[in-house]
Image (cartoon, rainbow, N blue to C red; front, side, top):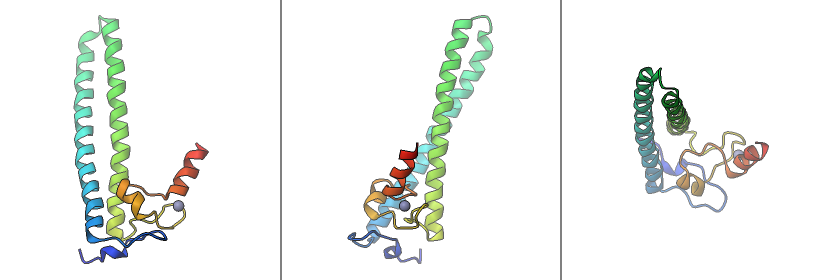
Amino acid sequence: MAKDPNALPTRKGERAWSEKDVESVRSALAADLTELTEEMAAAEAQAAAIAAGMGDTSDDQAEAGSYMVEREYQLGIIENAKEQLMQVQEAMARFDRGEYGICDNCNQPIGKARLLAYPRATQCVECKKAEEAQG
Ligand SMILES: [Zn+2]
């Protein structure tokens, strides 16, 4: 922890990062990491239980069908959690590399306000909007 927290980038007009700001972003990321890991483990356990249950329903198509739907749902949760986990891990890695807070796309500061609201952001608002507009 030798790094100067005030070295994190800010946008024009924003105040420099305080140690407390940095701490708040870091602890939010750590909390997200724990939460998403647990969410994923729970969904994986559910999906496994459903898969195990499916074996017993081979003679009941309706029941097998509802198992399928439920399993799809759990797999969706897993996929989603996995993607978010990667974002969180990427954000944490950026901290370690000293690249945190720099937009992936335009290399400009993402901005303190945005990062405090959304600590795992890897793009500035403008680039994010442009990306979303592209679909
Ligand atoms: Zn950008």
